[in-house]
Length: 182
Image (cartoon, rainbow, N blue to C red; front, side):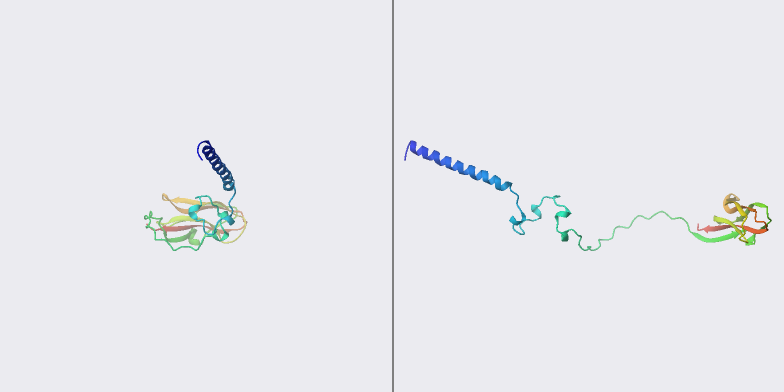
């Protein structure tokens, strides 16, 4: 075959090949666009390298893979910290001091003692204080209870008391005092 017949034959062949390519190309897109299921993937063929980073959530994993494993061994010890500041000094002794060595002062009914005091010994500081009585009679009124200054520093406790009980009472102020380490 030569001449025009050969050219028609070639043109027909080119047309046939082009049509075949067109047919294959159009079906390939439909197959590629379809979802691939787990049944279509060979076991153990997908690895960590095949999965995009940050694309999985805990819910995507099997329940057995969602829990932490056993704790690993302890790591090496860290470097020691910097030495801290010196802390507050501690108490080396404490005493409770009461008015008149704890025997108190007698107060008649209807009277007031404005300055009943208990003084800490030199070198001690007051931590707290209050008032005591020889009885549990009602009518004893503590008007004031507070720390007070003895020779320039707070070293004692002062109370003011009024006796409205109807009978003579014995009362005392007390102070809890402490000596701190220097």
